[in-house]
Length: 420
Image (cartoon, rainbow, N blue to C red; front, side, top):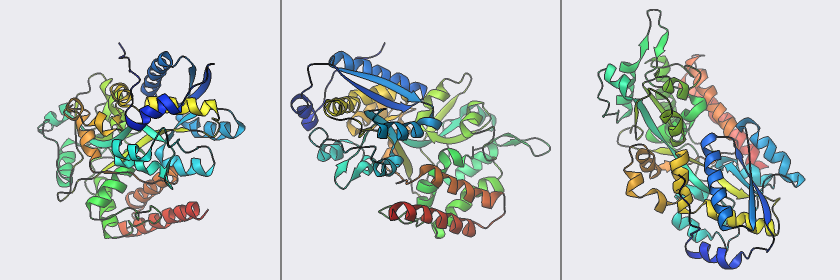
């Protein structure tokens, strides 16, 4: 049974909704778009049902598209005056959406900056441009270490005690790796998936753990072309070249290998919980990412909901009211229970029931020391990390040379974007 959400907000948001957003007498129709992901579809449908029950003068149509088509559909629809009034977008797409004039700033009377900055986790402030917010998330994500408890036991490891350091991570991965007599990989000790979450692990976790910073404070300059960046990629590549505990995209990708019981450990996001929980026979546990020399870092990402330039007049008011509803604490708890993504408001996340949860808890703890990359082109920046690893593991290039090439390519990308 789905829990009904009372339409409750606090402070300035609540006052604005009751006073500043007087709704018209006739029903207003707005559209909400997101990409197709089963649990997300179920969550937003539940929220729409509850919102419409409390706001019969607003009708919300929910449309979703496969991820590969999503950005193209949004980019084509809004300029033609069609498509969503409220759109979900990856936080790293903000600059591109603003440049294309697909988004409008959130109304300050409904979403005061002071309230956002007091109530939401700090990484949400990446949505603030020149004092105006362009989107708010219902949920945020972080990374954690998943391990297969059955495979731990088979390898003589204590399934209640995961690796706490990078050195231990390597040692555990070695014990969990299985190959046949010809050297073919049968079971990965640790998945290696730079196209998955590993590029975040390298950029925002390993680089920092080895004493560096991936970018300048304003995000416009690559700063990982240094000793820390080289050490970080040397460690990551050594899992393939020296320790041979895995193969790139073993069994297609990391989540597939882990779900199939063919990987002892994997690093992934909280959004993977539903997929893993639904896998028959998979017994696993979750913990915080391993530290290095006492340093713990994490990566946080999120999808935000923004109001599009298509929404005007009464539609824009209705869109703001709907966005406020799906970013209240009760909606965030529903999203956590349905999707497995963490509440974006601290008051919703930092409660004992969530912090002490064996599945949610490690991710919530990771938010306290997480950083979010200010992407200008997430796909292209991911590919740069993929190519860097290939240059070392497949082409035999030195780590220093591979990092220098990656830094040069990424700086060109940043210069092109910010220069324009």
